[in-house]
Length: 249
Ligand SMILES: O=C(CO)COP(=O)(O)O
Figure 1 (cartoon, rainbow, N blue to C red):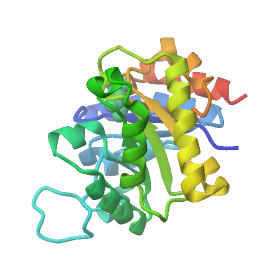
Figure 2 (figure 1 turned 60 degrees about the vertical axis):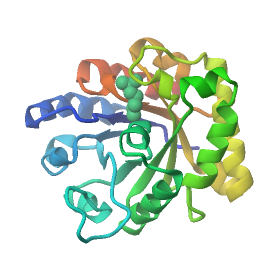
Figure 3 (figure 1 turned 90 degrees about the vertical axis):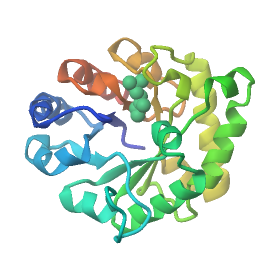
Figure 4 (figure 1 turned 60 degrees about the horizontal axis):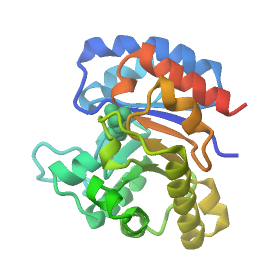
């Protein structure tokens, strides 16, 4: 059985005052079997460790090199040293804002694994690609090129985030979500073998909120969610954690 994962990506939101939200989230995380992960801005990771309790912490990106002259960047080891156990890689906002390529994301993945971090690799199609029915081709290409050969069920999580669903309130139908997650599962099984392919957790991300979480969590091959806006406040994120725990029963 794959452990369910409720992951929150705070993006560029939050100062130290936001850490108060973690206490209520930690109480919810304590109640069920699902793992809870919060990826706050990197500036907050070290100070979040205390309030986080059972909640795992993650970075939102890392450099592909272990150290060096890269002003403003953070290595995977620095994130781990601050208290992170996960890092999000290849988020569509990084792919767009920083022109990150699949090859760079693959190298970042290796860097994360060298530092002992688990990688949450994001894939997803744009609206144009979705409307042209190219979703599976795009996802297949991103999976093949962004994930290194050394993937295991322990070091890799894949998040399917349609770009057009992020922060828009638009969500694919559960049939569409199921189709893409089944496709990702089959590609992982084909490439890494059934053992690894079946043990990697697959998350859906894009406008997940309490109102739609339950049906998304009952969808084929969905092991949890990567949540943006609705992970910032405990009052929004706790019902999502609860829905995931319910789906695991
Ligand atoms: O990008 C996301 C998480 O990484 C999703 O963001 P929203 O939940 O705000 O749509």
